[in-house]
Image (cartoon, rainbow, N blue to C red; front, side, top):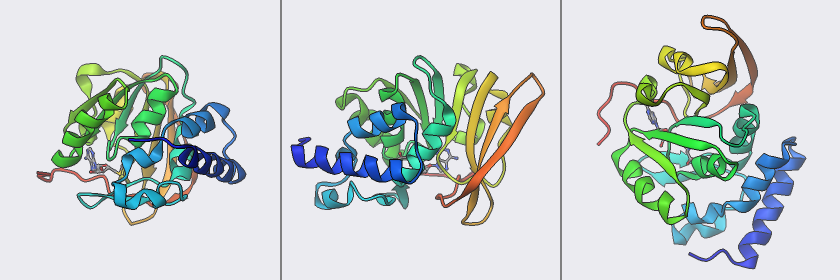
Length: 215
Ligand code: SAH
């Protein structure tokens, strides 16, 4: 795969566009300028890689819109060395943005074909990301607690295990809503049983699916 000057130029423009839409965290913008989003696209669709739009990645799923990736990542306040759990690996693009920012990334995907792809593809890009096949509603108890947890699919409610697997001081970012529109929500854990919940506007995600066979 080639990251040509043309791709790099398109990426710079995309990042400027995202900045103009209100993303200010320079670490987030730098990571998005670094990770070649077109590597996550089939070669016949390369021209769509640098539009600020979601795009189908197979198995009925999408790679999130770049602005949405930036918005969720900014809410996480990533610091180098943060242990981060992502629910919904999809193409693996968001996981690479987090890894690029110096996070230790664990990611879970329930679609076998997307999981198989990510397991092979992410190391080929040079990122060390732990990819798991399973149900994100359960989190990853064996590796908890996490500094940050990011859900990249629309959840009808906040799964209890995710809140439990957060460190005190940790942040969960999750789009919540049972319809096709969700409210971007952050939960900051302030004590063993206390947390602060905030809402950050409406977004549209594919649904976080529960208890359904995925192969
Ligand atoms: N973060 C992805 C975009 C994800 S789209 C990217 O950067 O490309 C949402 C993903 O969540 C889809 O791949 C979908 O299969 C997955 N998903 C849905 N329900 C899930 C669940 N219960 N556990 C884990 N993954 C799930």
